Length: 416
Length: 95
Picture 1 (cartoon, each protein chain N blue to C red):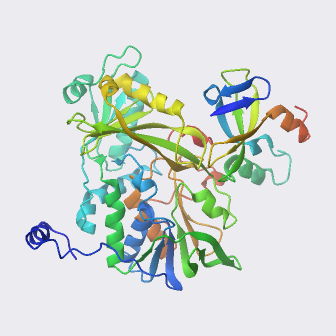
Picture 2 (picture 1 turned 120 degrees about the horizontal axis):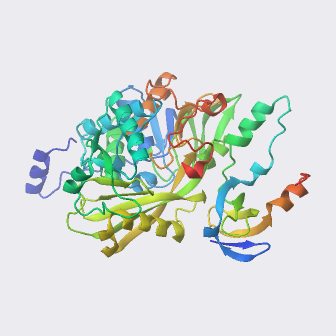
Picture 3 (picture 1 turned 135 degrees about the vertical axis):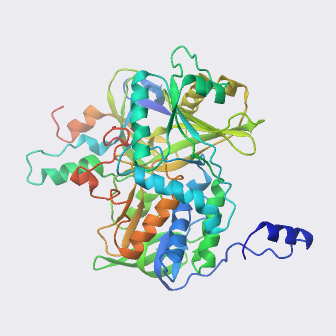
């Protein structure tokens, strides 16, 4: 069924009797050509592009809980492509371009809103660094514009530009950045994949890999063995746990990142803003809640909840630039588990085990990457060669010395 | 989280900074034939368990000692705290 304005009107007039489930609930078959582990944004996008762009048949997505119940349902919904390094910027810019056409492509309203993102500048050195970043973005076909304090005052009159310690000296804006209804991304990809024959199998936990003579021939699951010619893992957050079942140690630690939503407020924030002197970012959802977050807690965790020191730190960051936030009450806060890689950049690559492919290490930037991650992982699974914008995301880059370290922190995952 | 410091008693985790897996104590021999491979494993690869995890914390806002904390990464429960110095000596290191 194709969704359209006409269809909505027709259903409204006929008692909404014509709507059908957006995807099936199939029983797992005994074998598939390609099995994707993880029914989150990246896994579902991978299945969608495998079916749509690469013409693959017999694909399954295995999800241990319900689809979209992991990090695609737990993030702060921001999309942007304001990266500096060559290994990253073309990839994220392709992702942003895919976001721009996504709703038409998969015929689903993901509420993509290009309301812009603004990175605030608080010192001369930071202005130099952000000017360089803006130039790198423009060189890679993205958009970037430097704003003066006066321009920022006009757009965001409530910001504290005269903070004694961190005065706002300007900003780097990407007008094409914005926010997306995150759950709808998972649902849209699921529906698009399902309608092209992909089996989305929920409540099906992968408990092990069947590896024969160095080749992965399928997965053991809570619903029995499922054979596969190729297996792709897309379970960022739990990558360490899953790949240990294949005997792999990864250049990844799992950490908890907290996020927060205030009570619903009248329209205040037109776009996404980020604090440059601490780690704080904020946008306003369409329901009116201020959605904000900051640093990871900084210790290994699979707990999906954090501790109070980081709550305090995030709120201090908020108060420094946006004092009005102190009057808003917090409605919800939660934690998600991040694959923190050793250089802060992801991995989309084959493993040393035949037929086993890996997508993970997204740190806390995986949501914006969803379309490109899915497309590049699908490309890798279908052709056994990396997509041209993902050639840097290899497992062996740490061994070869080709890190993609945007923050220059070295092999210290809790600092990225 | 409260870390029960072996010398100072219970202290708020906020006084500490976190380094990572306690295997970082076991720096490989740089003169070994396969030193490059060993250092790659040491520096970049992690067990990253869901469950009990031995990890290094530095008491930066306190007595500046390094601790080996055994903590459950699923519940955040801390079951054991040792001085990293003692752990290293037990493993045959001079300091």
